[in-house]
Length: 246
Ligand code: PXP
Image (cartoon, rainbow, N blue to C red; front, side, top):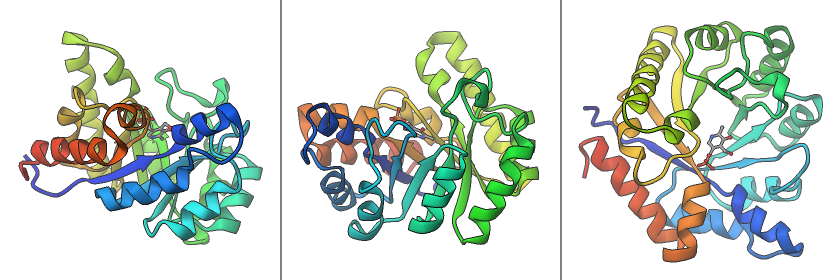
């Protein structure tokens, strides 16, 4: 069991989903991010999708400047998004797939298949001092591609692990564990996220090489019932428990 405290990045995309359902300004993702900071989040994550279905352009500089936590800017590997990242200069940029042809079978970015496209983008972000991570499946080929692209960080896609149950989930958990351990050998910092909730977070949080979890949809949903602050505190408690810290 690792006793190192895990970082929790709170993804505020779905606060913006609710806002955009009616247009206007409420509920405000920047307000949610400030509350997340007070509740013990270590970072804020936001995905500016090409279709702007939740976070919109004006949210990004505000999330960076008004919240006081590192911003992890999730983005497609496109020229438009790179230009925006270079303008806003978030702490980190996580490259995620948006189109089907950019994905691996498990849904992560196809870092291996897209190598030639990604290489210059990763270099430009890195040269601007932005910490680049690649959201990839727990797959050795993708991990090696991430390392050869010069990305310092990968975020392992936990979506499949969250969707399945029983023996299948144990197999997937083992794959995530092996990938996290391979990250250490390849010199990659290991994050994880997608689909995490109270009932599935602990085995992922217990993987010693994982240093950050990014969690959004469940927390925003739970906030409807308990409020955002208690939801984040409970997630924090479960993560600390898994690390032997609670
Ligand atoms: N990490 C990445 C790279 C993501 O794209 C997402 C979803 O936007 C998350 C984490 C958070 O996933 P969820 O909203 O299911 O917690």
